[in-house]
Image 1 (cartoon, helix red, strand yellow):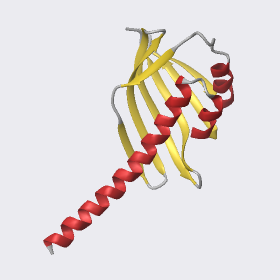
Image 2: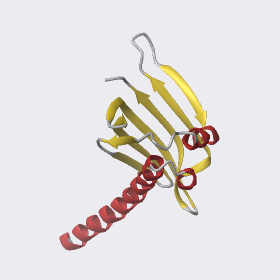
Image 3: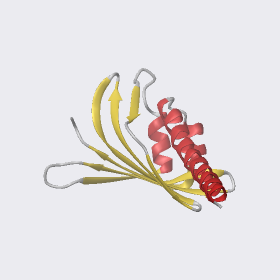
Length: 144
């Protein structure tokens, strides 16, 4: 009986880990395309309905900006070729329930090797017939 219980726990853990890994891969694919300024690759990671929100941290209150996916792609395509940027994810927290997942990733953002800002990303994803897609992203931005 103990062996059966142990085996069940192992199998359930593997299934949960596999789901978390698939969710995490979608976010990794997003950042690979993001750093490469690859709008086609970015589109593969999110739904047509995706919306991005950013909260700039200010002393008195946050300033919210909203950007539809189409505007985000246009802004990515307009980044100068000589500008290098890197968003370094510091940790991951993945929560998943069925076809919905949430990913929390603190980060530091560098432009041409210099720390620009830091904060946290919050991604909401859903699983459709093609796999996990980013539905929503909100991030905070604080100057160092």
